[in-house]
Image: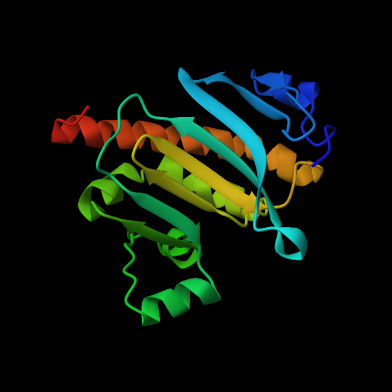
Length: 183
């Protein structure tokens, strides 16, 4: 990723700070506080050489770790294969949402209740905007990642909504922790 992928102007539009690379090996990122929680937007690379993949990600910290785990991703071929091998998903009795999203959790009843219409609408909007990654809530953070860099303007714009959803899911994780007395 070159330093033009994440720009101060894009950071400021979210109310976050642009952090330039610390050295030639590091990458710029965007970080700060959004809705009272620490949020970071960044690129990272997995693999190496010709088989490396660049990812764009946003993560938000929970105030305390909890036991709730959540994975939300677009329905597709990979999720159908996963189901064949025993992966279990939950549904929320919203036909459009259930057709579009593959939802896994260790607390099905709680998450069904937490996926209120407003949150489902945001998730549908980001799906229609072209998201291709996965939301994950585990331990002390919520993270969303998809392949590609922020040089793609549509991705950079979509991540404003993704950051909001990540914060919503962090709140869901905190409520689950409070209910179980682990906060």
